[in-house]
Image 1 (cartoon, rainbow, N blue to C red):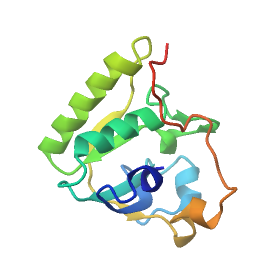
Image 2 (image 1 turned 180 degrees about the horizontal axis):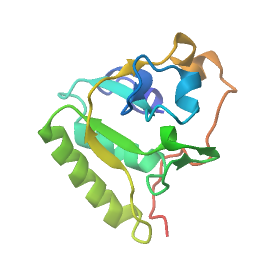
Image 3 (image 1 turned 90 degrees about the vertical axis):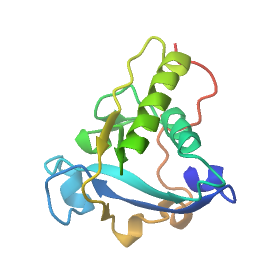
Length: 153
């Protein structure tokens, strides 16, 4: 969704992968076993002169359901937790501000459970996961992944 929404708007690259766990060199099979502690994540490179971290995080909080613990649509397990992995305190501050604003505007009756934590290591997912929907146009569609435009009551 990021590539589609931010194409030609400052997005440099997106890589899918894993982070937040204790396993070295995780792969899809072990991450899906829900034993590694890793979350499935997206690493975004962007030009801050064209798109702000605030805009990217606003999109993040509105394009998935940040109120479900360890679940996105039909997928369950800690690898599906909502998380923002930050590289410094400034990013963490912006993430908390965006989370708090989105909480008030979009989820007044549901608590956002998104983790905001420092990143330690990002592990690239396997090649077949990169650009997955481009390679599989009729592939996976999660019913909870859409851009929210009004509050979720």
